[in-house]
Image (cartoon, rainbow, N blue to C red):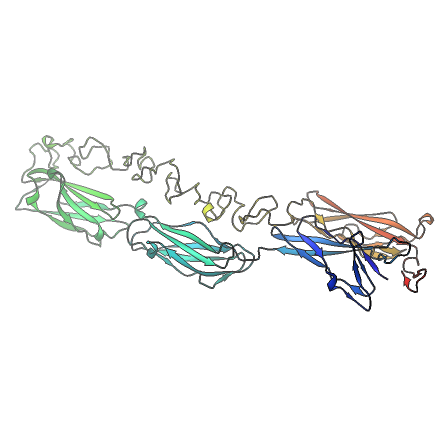
Length: 580
């Protein structure tokens, strides 16, 4: 007999975006049958032997799992002479759809806007790693890279990211980059990576290596001989025995000068330290020295301009008659403490509480002296007493330095990982105060963007606290005769992924062996009251609950018929065809 179809609906409580549609041109019928379409409560009629495909489409607005129930009701013609009928046994059919909404393309993500290298001396090599991630849901293909900048020659892009290489969704590639400076200064280079990401396929990062002058120790020099207060004559001559060292620079590349204090610190001669940092001798031309007490000042400079100095007091041709401590200088010549041979004009200042160089200041230039006048000396905790912006408690800018002297460079800036989750703001952390928020973190249903992909709650079921029952109770038959068995099912989803418990409630007369499963077998009543006539309606319901007590309800309507009344054929008046 012709079948009537009512409004086909999508039970989509989470707003996933499922829709249904059909095209009568796709209908298939045997013989002369046809499918008709209407605009009222009855949407379709199908003649016997006819089929009509119904399309289910999804247009998601966010990523994640999507579920819906498709409900197809059958309806009967209410006219005195019906032209179509409902299905008496399956009055409502319920189907289910599930999809995973994805981005559909690879998404390029370079972690950070700046890759800083540890300071390194010229000629040495420092390696760092650049992390590149595919944040999308499809494969990402790299298409090469380029560097721009005058300093790029100091950076060598190594292995780890080749043109044509692909990364699957969620995978990372590590690109090794070497920095080999040729001089002490800051080097900056722009590295651009190309990919087939259709939205943001070209991304750049700055490679930067700060001069090691800011952290490495400077040079050192020591006078090994002759002894303090040596009397120099033209016939004896003078050879200084020196040792010059530098932790990060070949000693042979240092600048070494020897000056005379008596001659207004004019240079007497230059010296050339050997690369081996071994002791060496420098012949001093006595003809260039003034007669009387003098202090030879040895000054050594590195490529950063940092200076180390050592001094040797001497007397040329004759010493002071009032020199009590044997350093060549008497009080009349300016010795401010003639009882200590470490104190004389232009002496190297030592951290000993004395005014060694007789300039009126004690310990100037030593760890007890505030060289950069920022209020702190090395003894006070200043970790770089040549930089007035570096001292305990200083503001911490993102400059690669430990400005506040807490042994953590750039803490509290965009470059620092403040919440210790492995990512800084420069590396893509969209909330660096929450360790649960970082690129690639697990997404929670809390309205926040845990994985920093600009989408909060990448799950279409987020925001649904209670378990979601798809549609109504799904009955294997919507009608039965006395004593028959049918199945009832509740398809439920919990957005938080927790376990769901079920509790069934059945009208009196309906029986089931278990009432705590998601699907139960129901036995229809064995008798109907005489007052109920040929059939009676019975209700079944189920409660789905999560561990927090959130609940959802679903209901099912079942008609129970007297034996022999549901399946018998009925002869229609004025027709030759039997209808159920």
